Amino acid sequence: MYVQPGNKNAATKFKRPIVDWYLISRRTFYQIIAGFLLLAGAIVGLYLWKRHQEALAGQFETQGARLVQVLGTVNIKRARTNQLEPATPNTILEPGDVIYTASDGAAVIQYVDRSVLKMKSDSTVIVQENAKNAKTDQQVVRNRVEGGTVNISTGTIQTAEDVNELASKSVKFSVTQNSSAEVNVAGDRVRVSVERGELRSTTDRGVTESIRTNTSVEYDRDQKVGEYTLLSPPRLSLPENARIIPLEYGKPLPVTFAWGTVTEAPRYQLQVANSQYFLERALVFEKDTDTPGFTWNVNSQSGTYWWRVRAVARDGRPGVWSEEFRLTFVPRQPGLSDTPIYIGKVQVSRVASGIHKVSGETEPGAEIRINGRAVSVDSDGRFSIVMPGQTFRIAAMDALGRRGEKVVTN
Image (cartoon, rainbow, N blue to C red):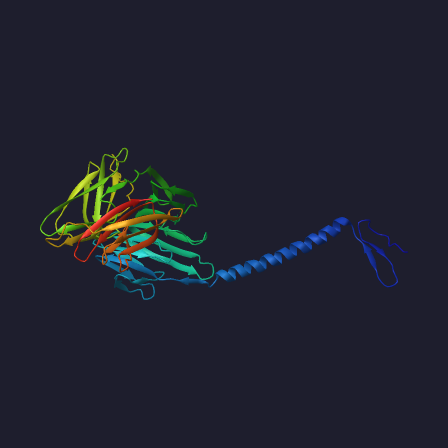
């Protein structure tokens, strides 16, 4: 055997008749293996990244946001044509469209993720993005508020990657699921008041923070200049939600609104509207009161209304609005019998946690609503429904205007 002299660290070569053999150090061997593994990992990582990008790219389909409600003067500047046109209910909005509400106008927009944006008067909003990924179901909604006041409400998200952003010139707000907040933009000043849930703000300087329920924060350009705690919402009691009240023509009916007190609240503000969105043009009346209650003398205002209350602090700063209760007035025929419609054999059985089956019987031909939800009644007067809740208000009504009501609790 012949050993070739040389550096000790170099490979040692053994001369064989057919095959040349080399001896390498253990360290060199490990380095070679590590290099191969790193190269293989880089190739696999690049492949997976490209697959992920391919899965996302081109899969977002632009969805049309929809104007659910329009009151007063509202205009749209179309991105495609740069033309101004009047807005009407059910108008479809595309990315880049600008919506303007005049001093007498208000609007409600619904997006692909079922979020709702309410625009008050003298407001301007740009729809930046409203899309859904066909493969991952990710939903992306982005709006920019150029000026005015808006309220954003979100529901339950479908994926962890869902995005709902509301931005001004210098601050961007990421709205989490099941949240509600009011954003006011006046030049460089921005005020956000979180009524429910959480918003995450990011300024142009990159400063981020979480803004939670009952909190109001103010910004001047990209600087935070104030933070306040808002009074909690009152708990509504009377009239109960989804209450149906008969009105007899020519006879005023006093309807009493009542709610729970809020600590440190010297007064309250009550709103009654003919729209569940409480747009300014839809308000029937607004009342400030020092007590947790107010009586409304109703004459012939048949129809469906919504009401809500908020506490007002000693410094005049309004608190968070309560939930909305629905109230319906229906005309009652003169001389109609006062005998209520029969509702009986009511049973409430548990189906799952917080879910119950409510069943019973009423007079054939009567209509049944449970907690405001219409329930089908068969020809024999039997009804049943599976729904969430613990307390169930069953309201019956027939074609003559007769009524009946029963409340059951599990």
